Picture 1 (tube, rainbow, N blue to C red):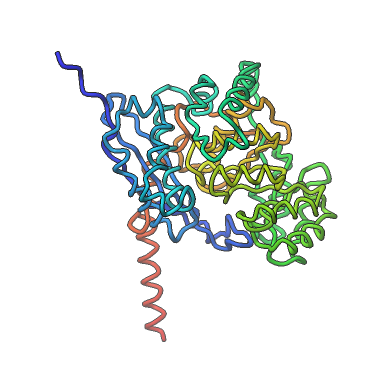
Picture 2 (cartoon, rainbow, N blue to C red):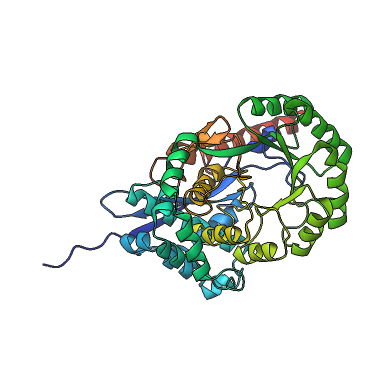
Amino acid sequence: MAPPNPARVIAVDTHDIRFPTSRELDGSDAMNPDPDYSAAYVVLRTDAADGHEGHGFAFTIGRGNDVQVAAIGALREHVVGRSVDDLCADPGTLSRDLVGDSQLRWLGPEKGVMHMATGAVVNAAWDLAAKRAGKPLWRLLADAEPEWLVRQIDFRYLTDALTPDEALTLLRRGRQGADARRAHLLERGYPAYTTSAGWLGYDDDKLTRLAAGAAADGFRQIKLKVGTDLEDDIRRCRAARAAVGPDIRLAVDANQRWDVGEAIRWTRALAEFDPYWIEEPTSPDDILGHAAVRAAVAPVKVATGEHVHNRVVFKQLLQAGALDVLQLDAARVGGVNENLAILLLAAKFGVPVCPHAGGVGLCELVQHLSMFDYVALTGTTEDRVIEYVDHLHDHFLAPVVISDGHYRAPTAPGFSAAMRPESIARYTYPGGAFWAADLTGRKEQTACTTSRD
């Protein structure tokens, strides 16, 4: 009798999903004053009997989300037809195939729209693998054998800073005491900080109310956006510090706004408010600039990473002593495999990881990476916090849960990436119910204005 046909990936579905966050200035900062949080969303559909799908996305802030969706679609031929068993047993194979497409690689290499598309598809594969294993992703990674994890990582360009043998040693060491840390994580959760109080477009009353509320809710750190006007920033930092008191950490984030000299002057001007870190003080590509800022503004720490293209730039930031806090992003680089490399680099250099999560679905994803790091790699949460923003979680089937300023550990199988079908239908651009009605309303308003004129 012939063996049954193996389950395969039969389709790669994509969706352009956008949320109108700019209307309340949620997410606003010095470089992005009117973001519409968006997801270039992908679903790996299979013919497996268990019915599981893999969900992933790349985060954008509105216009151009269609370009990101098209980039994901360009990877379809690498995915459709793959054995589900093989894909879930070794997601690294898919990662290497996507990164290694010689023609698409020319558009990067390993950076920009195509690399983010790779991350979306790779993350969807990990979501599928975790669902089939019946585990949340952080648990799948923490339970995995160190040798298998090392095989998931592309060490090309890294071995002058981190070798496979060094990574294996770190992972083996990280398993010591993992059971106790897993139990503590499930009981207590992982510490968070919030940016929800500090968007640049919020007035002082709203900032003060939300900052005080965050402290009352158990957050031990909040973050304010800065960088447009120094006098405004001084006023806002003074208001926030008064609202939360001296014992709550206050971080500030310039979102790449400044040149190096300006970053140094501006950060020093805010020093009276005891900022814990200055985030993205200059171009994310300027490694030596970050190092100069770090040397000049200490003891204020320098944090960066949400716009760092890949593991190679993170390697150089660490080698140059250019950052105190590494802010990886679950959807900026090439997915879980590359983020494993980045976590290991940070562990090798002894730099804490405080992930970026300011965007739709990013909180849901990145919690898994930090929790793996705690349970099975560094074994600590000292000086480590995950960003939290209080936006759009209700659109996910397994939304994050925050309690007393901590992320509760997810227990549902998968990568927490799956959106509710009704949210996908409503916010798909431009034909979803919300956007279709919005477009009709704007046309009617324009027609009324024209007729009055």
